[in-house]
Image (tube, rainbow, N blue to C red; front, top):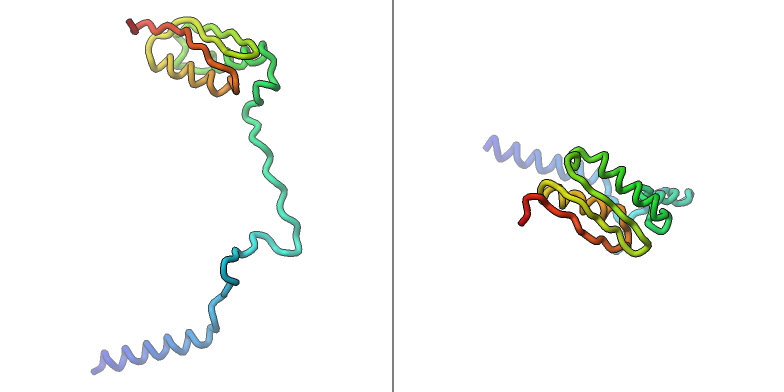
Length: 129
């Protein structure tokens, strides 16, 4: 009996507290709340990604140098011998690498810089037959 009385008291207290708080915050159907105050203008747009300029902005020698610098900065390509030639249509890779991992890494680096240019892969893998 003691537990039943306690339960009824808790239920009644919860009902009273809910009535004192008023109705929950409601929004109009199918609308989203504003993300900034109405009296302020929208925030400035984020700047575009400036990680690497597109190949239209780089001359062929600049792109070649950028790829060569990326190869030199990559310690996993230290024992490879890679050559890059660039023209308006393609980036051509020649030379030798020790294994497939170096080959894939070199191709990945070139893809990140080549933009719309075709990638011509003439790399020889030493372990490949």
